[in-house]
Image 1 (tube, rainbow, N blue to C red):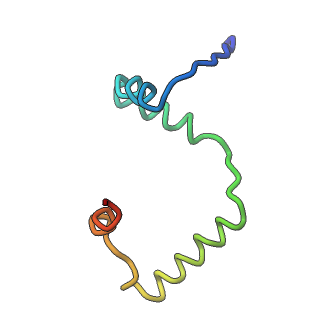
Image 2: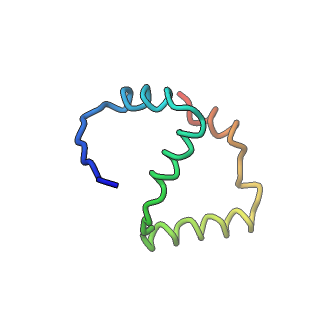
Length: 75
């Protein structure tokens, strides 16, 4: 298969509008293509997440539901 390189400037709003036109199967394929990159997660980030998991397990009362978190974050 021949590869084609495209450089198209789109705003997030325009890109979102285009993606919304895809059917569910196409959206899943796009998602897989985007996240198929073998990203290296920095050690600092890994340590931060590991520490937060340990704290949550040690004291589960620290955790809040997504519903409550969203309410707290919205202005």
